[in-house]
Amino acid sequence: MSLNITQEIEKLKVMNVKALQNKYIEVFGETTHSKHRDFLWRRIAWRMQANVEGDISERARKRAMEIANDADLRVRAPNGKGDDKAKDSN
Image (cartoon, rainbow, N blue to C red):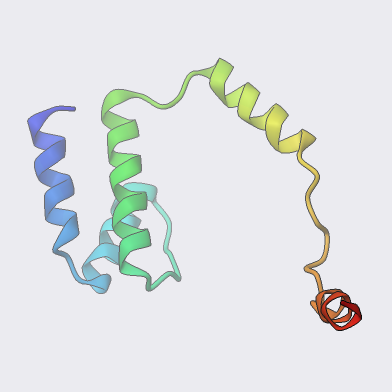
């Protein structure tokens, strides 16, 4: 990683949320509704590094999509009622 990008990332770590939201607009070209400081600086740092050093390879991107498509994802969150019944019966 170049010294310049490292310095830029260090600057992100001390920015307040409003400054990070403005930087997000600069880097991504769109607004964010997030007010989570750590999320913002990490996301911006990732994009800045990707812009400087290059993104993941097309092969890696395709493999990630294959894994995501094969994943058994829940459509609805569990309601938690089943866990209580199991505990009561023991």
